[in-house]
Image (cartoon, rainbow, N blue to C red):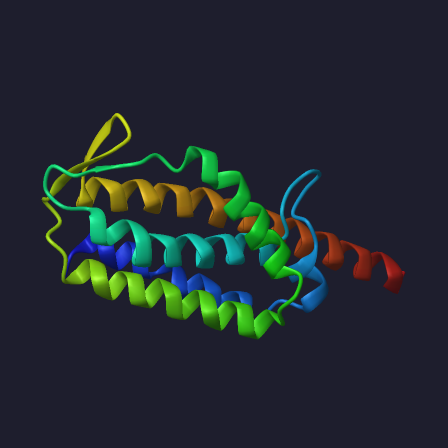
Length: 162
């Protein structure tokens, strides 16, 4: 089992942990001009589906895939809107299923295959490593927000007792 794919798959554990937070916190923006945790989860879900259904099949030796730069903003906006229309547990379960499906496809893929996205060359393994870094950035943002929310609530409740 490849450790990079295992790391990629571990995001599902984070999704399971998010089931414990209250709905208000889940749908609250994590900062000024930032998405909510729900929108970030929807972002993962949408992109996992796109990679699984549209990108991965074209990641073959010597292939040149078009850049998605023009599409990124639209997909992210759609994901954010979707996150506002779906219950927390349903969204998290969908994100878990789409991540596990993609991870399963990656487990059976040839990781050393070289292809290009626009002008940038990758092996499939390098592409997955980039996705993991991207995932980590979002997880850190959410974790920081949840930590500060928890600390803020704890301090507020302590102040209320006095």
